[in-house]
Amino acid sequence: MDECSDIFSKLECWYTTSVGRAVQRSVEAALEPILETAFGYHLLQVGLTRQQPLFGNSRIRHRAYAAPQPGHAVTVVAEHGELPLESDSIDVLIAHHCLDFTRQPHQVLRELQRVLTPHGQLLLIGFNPWGVLGASHRLRGLCGNPLWQSHQPVSCSRLLDWLRLLGCETESARHLCPLPVLGEGRLGGYAVAANGWSERHRLPVGDIYLIHAIKQVGGVARPVLRTRRSARLIGLGVPGAAPTPRQSDHAA
Image (tube, rainbow, N blue to C red; front, side, top):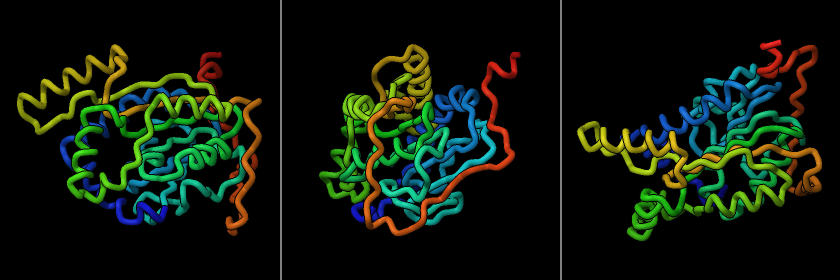
């Protein structure tokens, strides 16, 4: 991701602020019920940050973390638009800000769709350009902040259109963190309470979107691999292993 070669540490530093930590907690809480019931052989998280794994609540045994640069939790170093994975190989894919800082978001989304298995689950997480933080990010970008100058926001409504064209059915689209949590004082407590109420009632406001989509079997034709992809695609077969069972299997 040439246009974003220096934003990795800056975004990770943002996640160490009080606002960033509050966003992280909200995203983890929203993902928890989805990941607890997800099943399959392989889970993949892709994103720019290298220290925010979001799959801790998943029961899937094999988990991989892909980012364009090496990091402590990264197991696959790859560009988001050129994942070195076989098509139809990932059962659950968490895309964390990987559409926020690229000039080719549709190409990246096509690549995510390619590696998903039929009926695989895609979880897209990104900044809402129309939220309070979105306005702040645009202002900071205009003032010369290199992180937010690199921000290429995509609205949730546009992503829903793209997903439909790619043969993915949207299960849910939520907005998290309508108010930024500033500090640990009284105002911060009010913001936490207001955010919790908004998220429980699924109000269409918030600084972070979380889209849950399912790849349909009869989706669009698989995109042709680009010729400059020289690395051999990695197969993720697990001979003799059983996938994480469906929730209904436990009840049987």
